[in-house]
Image (cartoon, helix red, strand yellow):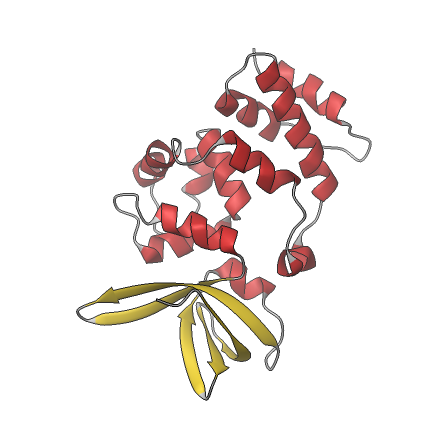
Length: 206
């Protein structure tokens, strides 16, 4: 119903915000990550929204980027993952981190979300692995963060090098999920290069 709501940030709670626009205050449920990235009270914000309409409820779920909104919409298609579960997962990991976890079949990372058990995390991987492509994952890793993300993002250079390492592994014939898992296990030092990450990742392929 609402693509986004743009207005003044009036209130921030642990799991929701109130944004006023046109004399109306919209109560929007958000993830913990979104709360951490929000500007101060009184600032203008643009929240991309998902509207949930039920017989007994009309709820708005909000995100600072379209990317987060789209990954949330994919999450809630998974059996057993409702909007609450989707926000819980996005409170402990970014959209890019979730893509990595799905590609790498890293159920433990997803299961760190409150209320998400191991079986549910495995179901997320099973249901989303065909809906999340390597191209999407690499685009997220290598692209500049949006204005909100830049405030909290770090290591963008590391992400770009990891992207290049994954691409190289795929070019060598490894599967996207295996390549992603191997690169994720590499600890990136200050002097790291795409080549050094690739060499370390290759050690994890055997």
